[in-house]
Image (cartoon, rainbow, N blue to C red; front, top):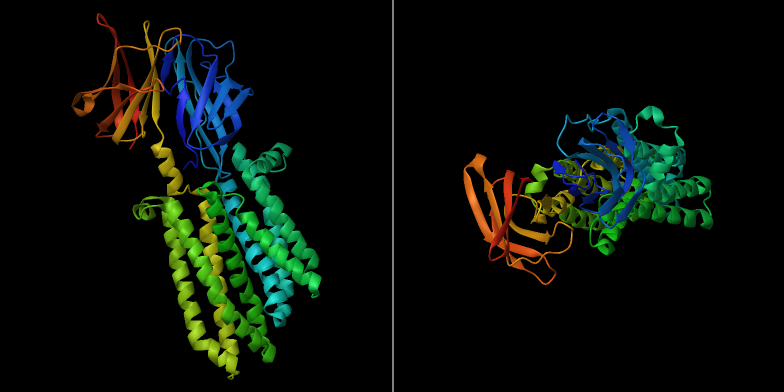
Amino acid sequence: MAHASLTGAVPADGAVVNAPPKTLSLSFSEPVSPLVLRLILPDGQSKTLETFVLRDRTLEIAAPGDLAAGTHVLAWRVVSEDGHPVAGSTIFSIGAPSSAPQAAGEAIDWPVRTALWLARIAMYAGLFFGIGGLFAVRWLIPDGAAGLPVIKMALLLGFSATVVSLGLQGLDALGAPLSNLTDRAVWSAGLATSFGLTVVVLSFAFLLALVTSSRATFSGRAASLVAVVAGSAAMALSGHASSATPQWLMRPAVFVHVVTIAIWIGSLPPLAYALQHGGDAARQALGRFSRLIPVCVAALTAAGLLLAIVQVQTFDALVSTAYGNVLLAKTALLVVLFLLVVANRWVFTKPAERGELGSARRLARAIIIETMIALAIFAVAATWRFTPPPRALAIAAAQPVSIHIHADKAMAEIAVTPGRAGPVEVSGIILAPDFTTMIPKEVTFVLFNPQAGIEPMRRKATLQADGVWRASGVVVPIAGQWHLRVDILVSDFELVRLQDTIEIPR
């Protein structure tokens, strides 16, 4: 379930090259940062590749100068733009294929994944019940100050979970086990991801709230406001939405979504405390809460819908992707929560504001149930850490599939865009054996799939101003392994044919 996908490699995956390559390259669907690069040699030995250049979405790696003949595995682990690690490998052979060396598979480390999930839940609880609760006490429900010990506990929990999350992020980034949590390199790797900035800003918000949590003066109120703004902004600095476009809209949408949740959910425990003690102050706080929260709910719903539309894109993705399934589960819990909110507002709030006997305690119990449902929503939302959004999957699927074909008289760099079954465009650059550009009289792309009984489909290419030969209107009816041939008419008397296989995914 990658967040950035490999879209091309040189040498291509499965390619056989005549001579050892001087440079290896990996291209991705979005910008990445390399974490671990290893070349597994035919004899099973592994070499760490430390010399590389990152050019936008392409990682160019200097190959060792003493590569022997046989099959090699280039294993890579990078961190995608949204802060999540991605790993994989490609295979190429020098001279002729040999027994492929064994590369370790990308197994799920359940202890690390479980720890990440629990830490994310605790971080949410600290942000919304701790920072949001402190803001509620200082600005909306002063009579809820009796709940400050619980708020401080939530702040400590959130701060601790945020700090630990940095190390866990480093473990996930490097593919290291939970026992390596104390390694300095693990924490450096976590800090180097985009999530590292989230940890720094969110930790500042937690510490500010903790230090000023006992101050009921103007400085304490101002600090609680700064903390809730900083904590909400921190959540917009990394994650799925941080890498979505347009970021000028998506990052503010995340901020609005988070800050309104903090104000709403954070107010629930202090309000429950205030209602249990009763009095005119509690009724006044309830009045302020009941007037403000509908505005917050409307804002967070609008921001949430915007984020969902951008990330999911199609209704089918709600069912067909893990991200969509999580969104459906979260939505179901939200519906239950909203129904309870409506019931509270129309059944319990008015009697409590009038001071009817027992109504305040009944409303307080209903608010506690709301709080439990909110915790369940946090637990569901925390699983998004492991699910790439359909938006990212669609971007990856739209990337081209490319191959390099060479022969004694010519070579070609061919790309099929998008790299999946259906309508595609086939494009190619024709090169001479010395890698100089070659301008033939005519180029024809031929696709066929004997296993599926599909005979050769020929499409004449047109030379573009950029030197690329393109053939549009090509339809690849099914996914699978296709034969791709390039017929190059060098002159009226010479025709060069290049052929290889290309894997077209679904």
